[in-house]
Length: 79
Image 1: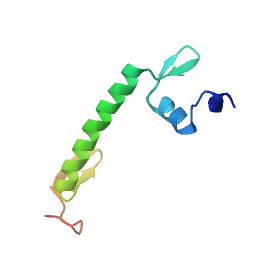
Image 2: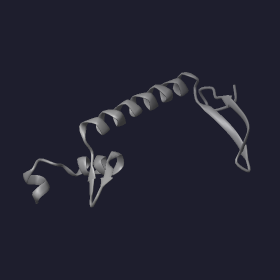
Image 3: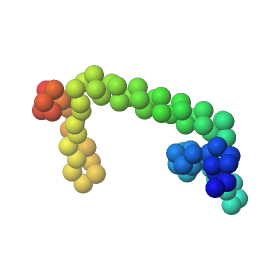
Image 4: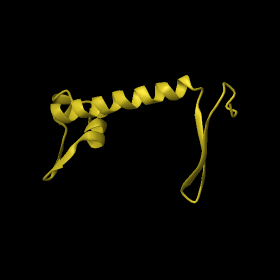
């Protein structure tokens, strides 16, 4: 009820839980932390766009060791 009175929607609570920091008995997401999270998301978005440009990327792992990596074509096959 108090969240509604203060104009804090449920999705914002999710953001605080994801990006906020523990400060005593509360979680806090201030402007500085929100800006840092946004910059991180911008970098992640740019990296994902590069993966899309390649048509996708695959890796083969064995016992936590990367054996090989390769670009995918439109159908998801090795290129």
